[in-house]
Length: 113
Length: 111
Image (cartoon, rainbow over all chains, first blue to last red; front, side, top):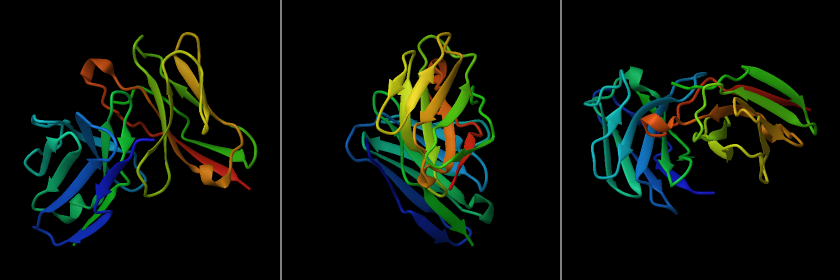
């Protein structure tokens, strides 16, 4: 199946700093990528949809100035958590779409201390 | 904004078939049914998808009812490694095919 690589797998950062997470589609071009957040014992919550070359579309309740998404190429999207706080600690997962379906990265465990 | 309903949890004996149901009564004619699973602390893994015909691959079979309002994922010979949360997803075409996750079914395969 298609491969989506997410980096880093885990990161610990200090409160107030920013963290960037990369999502790459390795063997296909993805015009659309999705970013999710998952808290313990909960399902994945869609945060935003990013389209190559245009601004991301954020789900209701997700702060676009806090979660910056850049989708500069057909194989790379980045999520930057700005001024991170302990409540931003979570499991962040990206997904990339080929023509049909979606494939997911392995996730990034963010811990803000 | 998931439009699917699944049982919260299920158990299955190792070696037996696991049948996981999903209700998607509001599905539109051109919307696909996708199944994914998530093992703890990993990203979701694609299993199978279908439109209206039954589908089979090396992992599972997907049975879709004739009216398309429900489907069943079948793992023919469940192993302990199949213990995971299974998600049935119907991306809505009218909003851009986003993959919204419901609560899924937590499948436990018992030795």
